[in-house]
Image 1 (tube, rainbow, N blue to C red):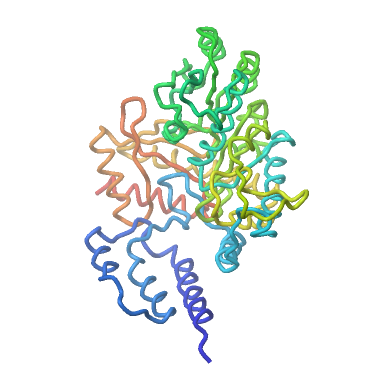
Image 2 (tube, rainbow, N blue to C red):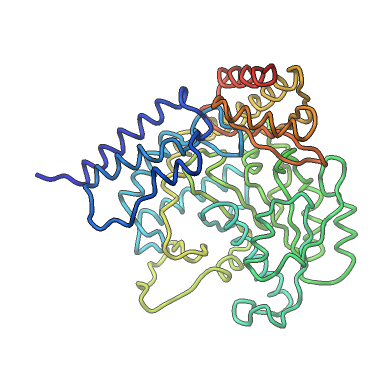
Length: 458
């Protein structure tokens, strides 16, 4: 009897296990060139189909040299987590179940698991119990979601219904932002029609934090619908704005405060790091990623909004072919910018159950410790300079001048022993160290420092 589903799944499991088992020996940096990948994967459009198991086998073979070892413990290039075993298993089941997590009627368990996991996350982060939430692709769409709610609220307060009337003729919105904001904020403003010309940078101190005096001065300049964007975990310094001071100032002026917490919001789950984000619960909307610190497979973004009415008004829709309402059931489409969507809540639910509050706290502590050990160990090598190490999971090192720094990064990556990224910080090229993978251990740190030493000695 033919078993196309079972055969394909058996082969997928075989290749997946081989991939995970080989993380310690295969190159962290994908070794294939662009031409090699185009040659191995590029074929004429198929005229006839192939057995499913054969397709899986050939895909695994042809793609392997073009895959970074981002699941492994020596991947430090960006803030990317690995996949917790329970999260990977749940993600596989998500694909097999193939539920459209649009509304409760199209995926009852998917809708309820989001409801439960969202409540867990609010509890873990210490966010207001009344806040609404959305499971999206990543912080990019989380910003779109949170800022859409903000757009609704600040214009609603001026008597303007943006969902019905649009932005043409609306009171212009101004956006006061930490100057070190992530570019995804700018993209969200473009998507929402607010535009980047609305951005006004806020004065910062030497720690790259927005100052209360600077925010107060900006707010006092003119009366306009205003959104304030703050940071929990800046890309390089992992800096946190002083929320306890800034949020009340913004609220008193009638402004909406939105927080980019792509990885920094997870500091709230660690008693040793919670002080970094003190007062963050006073904001109006928050974003973070599950595929960073929570270590669930891509893609997993999370948005939270204090004003649930504004959130729902910005996102919800209705159409005659939707089933009648399910009473008290939570329909995800009321809170998300997507209709057809993957049931992302299953992997988040599984990851939180696998780790628990204590495991999450330990993960933040461990990765922060490993980031410091990497930075100090590499910084102590001949020809290296420790530029900065944060109180969380980010650090910067440098190797002589800008050109030398970029060349050393390229050589480290080419060695296959570790993967790092470069960044321009305060006018100088640096190598950025980001640690958020649950698999990273002391042996990975020691092996990486040794590999960097070999490159510098060569």
